[in-house]
Image (cartoon, rainbow, N blue to C red; front, side):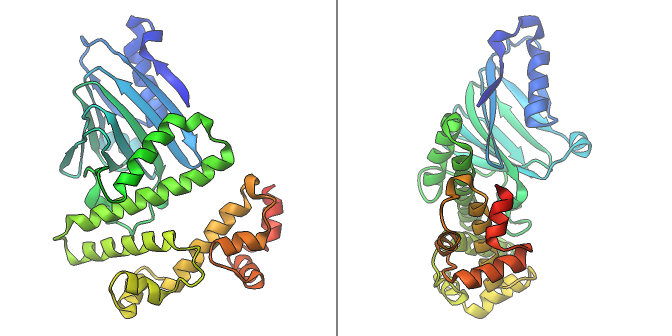
Length: 318
């Protein structure tokens, strides 16, 4: 993880402008409000875990960070961000909600809409940025949990929070292939933790309840892709709903349960085929790992989905 700025290394007269410049370059256009009389102390680091951006922010200078409508109009990549409080108690606000994060807690926010982060005491944060499609939730589902704390005491949050902290600490030690695989693990846990939080909120409109249920179904499917016996009936039973109701949930998104399972398996296989660390693993073994044990059937599915046989796709990636 590269150190983008260490305030102590910059002459005092230039620290403010240097800090603002690094924030804009690393975290996107933001309105940073710092008391001009407050001494600026802190450090910003940044790196990459596959498609997931990872940053560390440490500062003892009270200040506020705003993502304003004007800045959104200027530049608005389709990103979600997740902030983990390592120490201190930052305040995150979005969608008329505010979350005072305690150490170990994390929260999600949408970079395409206004938000505010307030540091009124010394903090250490890990910040993760990722394309919105990596959070495999139904459209609009995540809006119900932006700026809502996800605790690390129980549930998937108890798995996700320590992993996020460890990833931020050890980012420089991962090889590229390992980083790509680890990013999938991170996103699986984050998606599941967010889906659980959506469900915990309860007392939400029918459409939101459907989105929450579908989010949990998606997370369940991701966790069981390697089970060749995974089918719509098993998914429905695991969520105490009828297969017919499950099919209706997916029909509203213009797909089917079986098609979604097949798509996610093929995507996992495609990722593995492009992974240099797995180049000696037979194609059939990779497919079986994701619940597709018939090599001929897998080859037909892969070619239909991506236009080339899996072995040819692997050679092209090399």
